[in-house]
Amino acid sequence: MLKHIHLLFVALVTFGFLGRVALAQYRPEMLQQKWIKLSPHILAGLLLLTGIGLVFQGNWLANSYGWIVAKLILMFVFIGLGLMTMREQGQKRWIAFGAALFCLFYIVKVAFTKQAFFFL
Figure 1 (tube, rainbow, N blue to C red):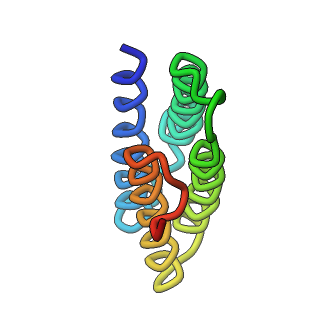
Figure 2: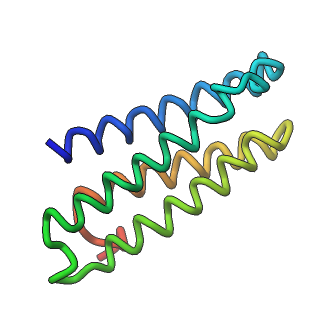
């Protein structure tokens, strides 16, 4: 059950990010609404909490846990790139956006393979 809730938050964070990028590009004034400002923080916090719950529920710290650390680091990189995406304009925005999407892809890949490096 916790896994499904975690996956729901992954989807909500992803679609929320895509929606906010679209708003930043086409309707930036809407980004000033309070619920649009707060929702990414709430969703990311719930995503992190459910992820921590899954780590303890699955007893994953008993074995090799480098992949968990990789996911956490990538999540922080994704947040930083997301901030850049929202604040920059033009080509810089789209480069940060592409890099943020790559981070999301890589996080999902690590979640499935339980390996931090794609080349191993």
